[in-house]
Image 1: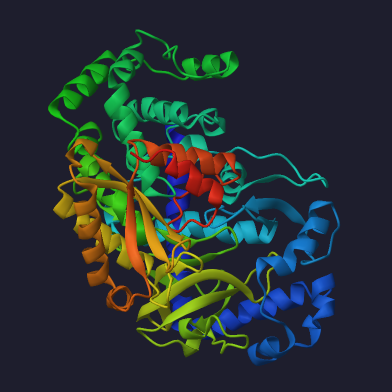
Image 2 (image 1 turned 180 degrees about the vertical axis):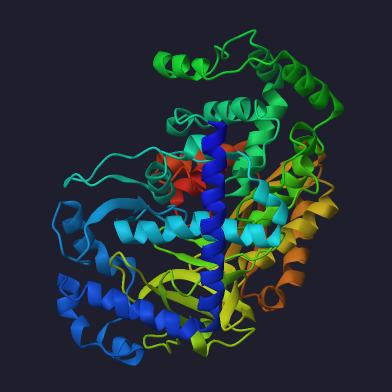
Length: 558
């Protein structure tokens, strides 16, 4: 095993270096590389039903593409995807669909996203090898390799009527790499198939604790890593017993007998390690990751936008261990790569998809300007329009980004918000970043720690108003909810002067603050999964429109 691990590590390091060098070359001529992607996509799909309808074979330039192929949204593909799910071929793409990825379901019902062998290869290879190449460049010490803790699952959600597998895109990716996972990650494959999240987190911890030289922790979002350490904080006595071998694997865990048997066979009881765990927990949870795994080099997860609320909490456990917000990616495609640790901006990867961009101030008009990769301006915001290798053409993804810099000739972007995740009662357009900034500032004045939040809009009164559902640590500190509400109102007015102007003009009503019970947002995540959200990618929506979800939170208000 050790020799195979070294061979695999050497091979991955070599391939990662090659991917990074190719990326550097691509960014020197980003626009031309991106045009070549469009050419390849159109040529390979020209004989598909969609390609024949829009005359892909006659398109000779990006300008020609704009003229002949319309902008699209997911609704434009529903009937096509239904036919593909039933087994029809050569519809949106000439390539066989091998999988349907489930979108995260954050802003509505999960969508089925077609995946081909080519589109999966592009995403998987870049997510594994390009990110590793960037890490090796940013952190040369990662060349030593080492196993990591990967917080994902690889379950499938069944198949379509035509027999095509369905599941989270990350699950499909994990399954496609399962032959190498024992050499990369500490968790046995049985854990990646579990449906009970708390049980899975406990077992991820148990097997990671057996690896004293753990090199990293990786999860799609920081909330999962925070939950991991909360399980450690609450369940450490049981983990100590299991590590020592006093109890093969705790009986309170929800495990099938055969799964339990397989996991027990892979346990390595270690009384000394169990004693160390007990001693370190008793010293306190602050910086415990550094003490339990002194060789940990980084934590990998998306850290930008509203995820920063979890990063603040994660720091309690991980101290100054660097974080790496590796990729900007969706089920449909990978868009960008982060080139540094402790950063939340991404260089557009010009070879992973074809990109167009709509200026943010034209998103709502019927015939917006659509720009190419080399027509963007630093400091301006845009909606991404995507063409990928799996059947989406000029697809309005719904993500709004801002160009903050250039890396060679490729834009460096930061994610701003999802369309539909913007508070806008009277044209004030309060962005997610402003909401989060206001909540953080208000929480300081409340003297309480902000755990999580979401918002909605109440239009039942004479004018619309914002409603905040907020979870804080230490609800006993709430002595006057009206005062807390006023503090938040003032913080929001400061974060968005246009909101203040709306309040003063009487176009917007005073906000309503609803503080919810402790643990509400963990229950909320489970509710989202039950409603069809991907459990690998589930994240708290920052603006609710679903009445059922509003009622769910209202019933948990203090």
